[in-house]
Length: 546
Ligand code: ACM
Image (cartoon, rainbow, N blue to C red; front, side):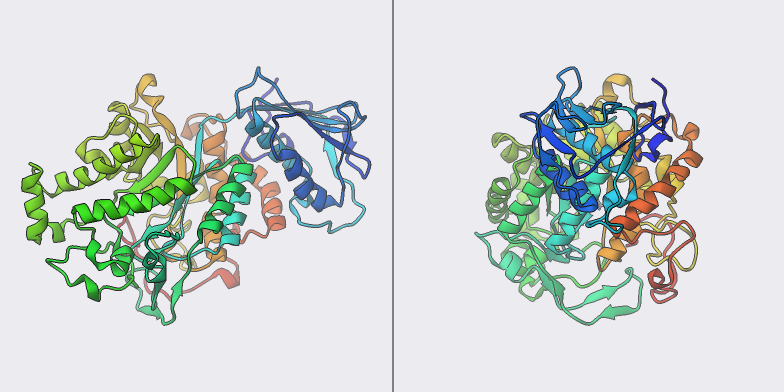
């Protein structure tokens, strides 16, 4: 079998393809669909997407119906691996190692059928989708292929989140890291503490643009997901073989929670009753007080979070906790003495360690940003390495699992071009090619240590993305390059065929058009995507600069 990644213009590139382009079959009104037990909801997904796109019923039929689409399991394959065969008998067979593999195979089938397969309804009624004969053999490189979406800085209504889960599935991404809380908003209903959303989900106004912008959006911004919304999101993700990892950020990035429940803050150094949900960007100095009250409160929060999110991992943030209030707070200093800690960093480690044990006792695993390494972690805890590779290297060497998401490479809020038209003029310039050449596994790890790299994740922080169209612009097309890094067996960065990827992107842009994704065109922003000069001069260089 040859490694013909250009055949079928597939993104992410599959392991191997054979015979594509040497004969065709056509799906029509009489094409039936047969699914073996255990293949999950892919049968329904195919009817809902391909069926709708081409106006085909894809009626259930017997396994041996001529020309049928057949979904089945094959225990010689890994769970997420699949083999797709478009055969001369006129049918299509997708074999997956498990239901997930069948689903990823169905994503490939959709791409093979051309851009119209990504529409919601037929645009050219009567057109029948045609498929080249051949075989695709495929399996992912990493088991964690993630996207983090910050819905705290700007709220994305539920339908927008469901749409992003569909976009993830189309790119074979399988972990949705849901950044639900921050200084600027609390976005998940917690029944025990109604003010978290009652007060904490709205702010009176918003800094428009980056931190140094002179502009304000003088209107309230907010919103939150009810527990029913969350259950719907988690179920929708599960049908697409995507796990949702909720993030409740502690002990920093917590001003919205403190605005709602002032007793959570360092009340001996600030009058927390005067705090509101933050309206600007950066890192708030208002952090949680290291008290038993705070621990009990957040145990109450996490109890409900565990009911809502069945996945193995729960993200507790742990990033960018400013220690100034703890340094000046007599109560925090007393806590340091009582616990026999060295300093404020010890207090942060104590705080995270508490929830590490608390989650482990409930059969879950804690994951946090790489700052959580600083105080030692329980054996099962994992790390999101964001400040570069170093955190990931240290975590893997200490025996912790790690997800590589270095801000220098895969923070998609950073601009993709140095041009003055770039509507989000912050951070490093990170082009499509830069993302394509990102290598998640640090070169200095031994093979044994490298086994701790669960995978990789692209992070979308939304300070400067006030709606879904802005998120689309920042995420795409770079998320397509990222998906290939996460899924495909690419060579070392310098040897990657970026020109070949760009050629396949021509087909992929047509798919994104059919999906209604407001991506950044290769020639630069469209007129309506520009925001020239309005946000002030671009901010250059390394964060924190959002
Ligand atoms: C982060 O970017 N503060 C994780």
